[in-house]
Amino acid sequence: MNRSINGLYIITDKKLIPREFFTEKVESAIKGGARIVQLREKQSNTREIYELGKKLLTITKKYNVPLIINDYVDIALELNTEGVHLGENDPDIKFARKKLGDDKIIGVSCYNSLERGAYAVEQGADYIVFGTPFYTPTKPDRKPTPIETLVEARKLFPGTPIFAIGGISESNAEEIINTGVDGIAAITSIFGEGSPEENAVKLSRFFN
Image (cartoon, one colour):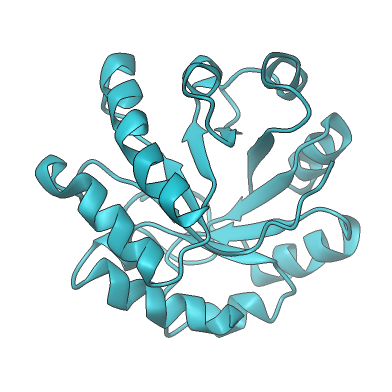
């Protein structure tokens, strides 16, 4: 079941968003045009992630924006968020689907691997993400994903929403979107310098 999933996809980062302004910063980005929010907290324990998710749900529900939990299927289930995002070391896609049900969104990181993309689609992922086309401080050791990989992914997986992530900013977003991807995911370009709302406006305008 592939939903209409597209546009600006924002991802949280503990280093970039002060805890005391967490919900405010995310809400600011949603006001700027973010269409999906992912709670990604690599340095936090599960209790903290649960509490942050609970707070974020009050914001995402207000704007009717899906909240996706990174890695933790059980937290997504407990909070009844719209879905979960899985990496290569996370639970199996079919396991997540069995636990969450058919009405939830399951996204999968494919890095720069078209083979992993094919596997994710075959297993029933609702969207897939390829990265990183450009350098990003969030993933400094990640191998770059050639632009050609995004073009090829669009041809190979015509019915599945595709996102690109990694170093995407206002200056290079158009090049990425021209590959045919359905959306771009952003962390630093939203929650780095400046206002998240203004930053989101600059990136979401490519989809308006």
